[in-house]
Amino acid sequence: MAKVNKRLAVLVGCNYPNTQYELHGCVNDVVAMRDVLINRFGFKQMNIKLLTDAPAAAGEGSSSSVVLPTGANIKAALGKMVSQAEAGDVLFFHYSGHGTRVPNLKPAHVFRQDEAIVPANFNLITDMDFRQLVNRVPEGASFTILSDSCHSGGLIDKEKEQIGPSTYKTTSSSLSYKPKTIPFESILHHLSALTGINSSDIGTHLLESFGANASLKFLVPQLNSDLFKFLKPDEGILLSGCQADETSADMNPMTSTERGGKAYGAFSNAIQMVLKDNSGGLSNKQVVTMARKVLEAQGFDQHPCLYCSDRNADATFLSRPDYKPSVLGI
Image 1 (cartoon, helix red, strand yellow):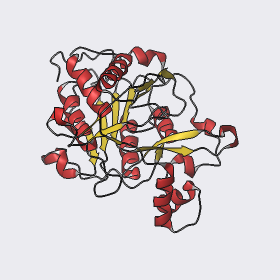
Image 2 (cartoon, rainbow, N blue to C red; image 1 turned 180 degrees about the vertical axis):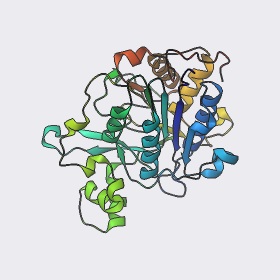
Image 3 (tube, rainbow, N blue to C red; image 1 turned 60 degrees about the vertical axis):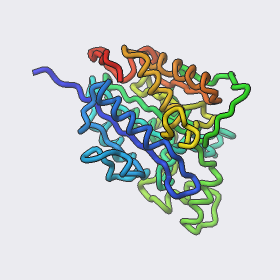
């Protein structure tokens, strides 16, 4: 009997409700993506793990989220997905929420900053964590990360840049939106208040607060980062909502009148529009290029990027060679 390839997904939406960092569209983003995965790309609902901080918005029945998107829970879900992977499987992680940049204080990386996402409990997941996950993906599988967050360019450490920074700027824009970023200083202040420790070293606070669940960046500072290096063309594919030095937009209900007042992330919405307008298979490069054009036409100053091997740049988005995408669209 022929082996049936698996299609697995982890979808994370963080709105940070009732905080000063509250966003509005992130849960909507991943709920919409779940429907696309099922109806367009052949994912089974039982193989889609949804983590949000607004369970009531996730739908009814078994699809509702009962797991909060903390750092430990997100990494556990991603680790389980990667551990199940075999050649021919398609893995997908969609994150919509805040991002940040963490100073890299190693002598060889003066002035460099590392990218990270900000889970609901501020237990940062860094580019080193994503590199370690990608290194575990077996040959012949694919692991696509779509991150609709600020500073998401380069979120897989040492992944090859296929579509990088752009110089176009919107000359004028009346758009009103909230950037999906929490400045490093604000994260440090938040964690310092929790730990009560007088230190400017964020690793100290993360280790004190989260222990073994903290990022590898802070758990193993004594190890050379070459342990997580880009060894060969790998199976990681990153579609970032913006460049590493840019912010991604969260459109709130008051300004998103073209979608009936429903909040959304600009990049996630652009991806949805690209997929809706193109019913056949699109390469990863085409998806990012088209999403850039959508955002430019809408007046956003953010530039989605693509990081992956040369082969995966031309590979069909969320498909293996033996999988035929639906021609019905979404």
